[in-house]
Amino acid sequence: MAKKIILALIVLILLVIAAMVFIFNNSVDVYIDGENVSVDTFTLSDIDTAGLNSDICEYAVDVMNDTTSNATTLKGGIENICNYYGLDDVEVNIDSSLGPDQIPVIVYVDGTSMLPTLKDGQKVLLNKTHNVHVGDIVVAESDEYGGIIKRVDQIDGNDVHLVSDNKQVSYERINGVLYEVKGISTWVDISDINGVVIAY
Image (cartoon, rainbow, N blue to C red; front, side, top):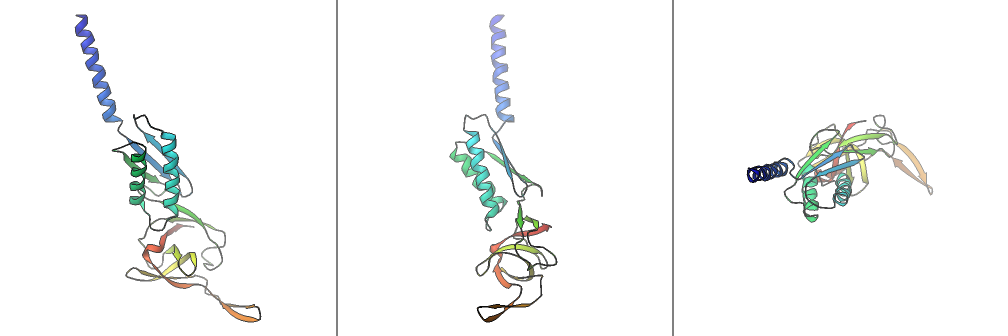
């Protein structure tokens, strides 16, 4: 009788362990609010989860600042980091203040070229996407001007024309030469757009 009870207990323990492994599969949950990143890793594996979470946070911040990255890039990179730490077959979940699989980024306006819509120093919320439409305000990287925030004026295939909202023209004398100062009007490639401003 005692042998049957011990055997039943062993079977029960094995079933509980199997159920735990099935229920608690490896997962990484990432939450992004536009400025901050938090990471929770769930695993039964004996790994350095603190180091893993720290590396994932750093990578997520890099993705937020890279114009060519998106949620798919973020997930793939996180899977690679997990593999490096010995965590295979991991489910990566991206959530944000904009919803699942979205990457919000908070940026600050620098200058007056988007007056009266946006003011110098104003904080805006950006949805990291290349899905842009005429009339959208976007943040982009321009070869000529660097990082800019402008309105989409035209779209021609992968070429996007961006303009300033501020149409005022002024004149400034520098070293005896009179210069015309006006808003930017430039073309960028769609891949140079970091995202669309969704709240300001």
